[in-house]
Amino acid sequence: MKIAVVGAAGRTGRLVVDLALAAGHTVTAVARTPSRLPEFAHGTPHIVQADVHRPGSLRGPLAGQDAVVSTLGTTGRAATTVFSDGARELVAAARAGGPQHLVAMGSAGLETGHLPFAQRVVSRMVVDRLYREIHRDLARMEAVLEDSDTIWTVVRAPMLKDGPPAAGPRVSYDRPLPGAGTATRATIAAWIVGHLGAPETFRRRVTIADD
Image (cartoon, rainbow, N blue to C red; front, side, top):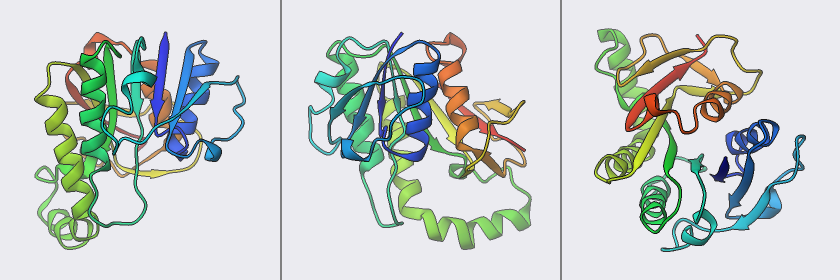
């Protein structure tokens, strides 16, 4: 497959690029700052500079791709539009003859109604307060994708950490995953690469956790 990774310079994006290369895919690494990209263990991707805040910036890099993975992120906790802007650019590129499958990383923290009462209180008082602005834009991102006529998958991850991939991660489709505490970036990256173009993931939210 021809695969593009947007946000390829980030910690999860780098793993997606390397695993996709290892799987034999042709990979385009899209980054706002390409100089931050490392040397990859399993080959060399095509490298493109692009900024999702600039309308139309992804149409060229994503033209002719089979799938695109967005691992966009932000530093700090201030208000942002990087996720929703990225989603709009992904959708625009797909409509212009770009990728058939859009995969975007989201957060398992967007849904807390399933948690026990005490955990909901803690989540609202601590987690929501710290990540409120990020979660708001992640919710906007999901809405942009859901309202589009594209084939998308949102991968909702809990708290991310470094480490090897889980041998048997827990996965839930379209429903919260009880007890989803953490997942390694390697777990998320491996699941994404292993499910690119998989019909069972189309237009669905998938929550993944190691424990």
